[in-house]
Image (cartoon, rainbow, N blue to C red):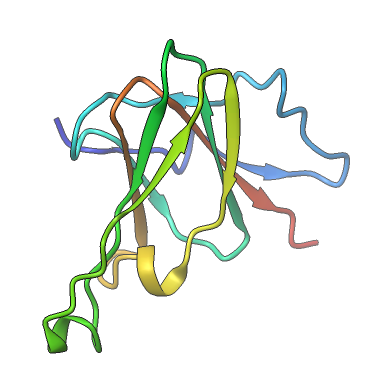
Length: 125
């Protein structure tokens, strides 16, 4: 199963009034397994929230993109794995240079359990 694009459903712009993260129903539950997660368009205004309400630790894998100068020198940049304990949430900031695909500007995240993800975009006004 391919990754789900969450740009229109689980990427939320935080208004001037703020955003109730605790009671939010806007999180996307990830389908577990490699390449079954989500993707979304990169913005330097984003903070990604990983939430784990399963019965054990959740490993969220943020895919790294192999780009020059690393790929030209046979250096493999590893994926970033964020472990979130049961009942916890974690704020994560994507890196344009490491996580954004050059061709379509998307970031990709997978999870080993049915963890949840929400992308918060800062209101630029």
